[in-house]
Length: 541
Image (tube, rainbow, N blue to C red):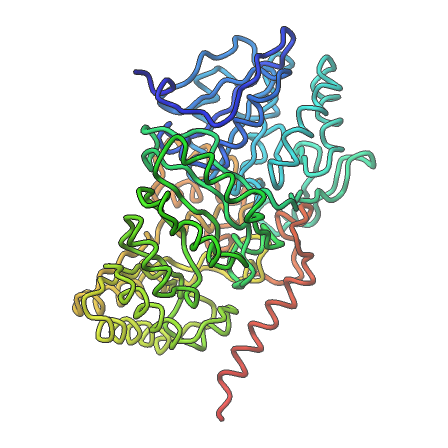
C-alpha cells in the first residue's frame, strides 16, 4: 500500500475542471511530519475541494504526480530551519530560488504558516507572495484574485495580488538602510498603488479547524486533531502563540466541536485536542463530561499544553481513562517575580495543587515547561525554579516529573521583541541540569545554539536571505552561521545585533510594514507594564 493510499479522507475532493489552475502545495519536510500539521491538512483540503484548482502535494520524501507547468506553488512553513528544504525543493523542480530571477514561465511561489506570518523578511527574496494570517480567509482570496489576472504578465499579477488584504508581495516594497550594515531607515511601497501597511488577516468564526485526513503514516499515528481554541487569553509578554493570533477564539461546543469530534471518531479511535490553552475553553468541563460517556471509552485522548490552574483530579481521571498517562503545563519559571514580569498569572500554590491533582487523578507523569534568560532574570530566580521542582518532587512522590526548558527568544509582534537573547542562557541551562539531575528530576533542555538561530530568523531583515543561501551549503550548525557572517562582514549587521542586542523602541523594525493584531504603541505599553512589574516586585515591603 502506498503512503497516499493509506489515507482516510474526511472531506470530498472536487474533480478538477478542464481549465483548473495547476498548483503544487508543498510541505518542506517529510510526509510523516507534514501530514501531522493541522494547518497543512486544512489548506490542502481547502484547495482540493475547489474544482477550479488541480492540486498536487509535495514533501521532501514523496509526492503526488506533479503538473508539468504549475502556475502556483505554495509552502506551509512551520519551522524556521525548513527554509533549507524550501530551496532544495525549488531547485529540484528547476525553479529559481530567488523571486527576482523567475520568469513568466515559472510558477508564482507563495507561502504561509506561523513562521512567515510572524516575520517573512529573512525569506522575502525567495517568495513572490506571502499570506499573512489565517488560511480560512486568505486561500480563497488568493485563488479568486489570481483568476482575475491569470493570463496577465507576472508584474501585473503581483501588483493585483498585493491589493488583496493580507497578501504581501515583498518585491513591491523598498527597504533603505542607514548603511549596508546599519539600521533600517525606512520600508516603503514602490508607489502609491501598493498599500503601505499589510494587515494580518484574522478569522473570527467559532468553527475552528479539524483534521481532513487520518493516516497511520503520520508522526502521531492515526490521530484525528480538533482545534478547541485559537490564541490564548493569558498574553504572556514573550508569547508569539498568544500575541500573533489574537483575539482568543473558542469553537462552539454543540454546533461545531462535538460534531467534529464525532465525525473524526468514525475513522479512528485516537483524538488530539489542540490549542495554546485548551482547558480555557469556557465549556471545557462540559466537553470532559461529554467525552466521559460510555461510547467514548475506547478512544485515546491527547491534550496539548493546558493552563496550570485548570488541572483538576477530574481532568486527570478522564485522561487516564482514555489511555493518557501524562499532562503538560507551562510554568516558565519557579520565580513569582519573573512570572509577574512576563504576565504569567500563576501562583506557586497553583502549580503544587496541579501536580497533586494530577497524581490524585491517576496520572503517572507531569511535564513542566520552563524558560531561562527571560529579561531581568537573576541567579536567585533560577534557584527558585530549582526549589520549585524539589518541592514538587517531595509533595507528589511517585509522580514522574520532567522539566523541559528553552532559552528566551524574542518574537516579532510581542512586547519582548525589543529584548535580545541572554548570552548567559547556556550556562543557566547547565546549572539547572546539574542541580535537577542530582535530585533525580528529568531535565530536557532545548539546544541553546538552536535558540540563537531561531532568534536570528525571528528578528531578521531581508539582508539575511543571502546569508541563509550561503549557510545552506555549510550545514545548519551555529558555526556555519558564524562563518557566513564573517564572510559577509560589512554587508549586514553582525550576529550579535540580530540575536543578543536590546533594540530601541524607536528603531524601524524589519516587520514595521506588516501589522499584527496589536499596534506597536500597545506593545510598548505592555513592555512598560513588564518593567513596572519588575520594579514593584523589587520594592521592599
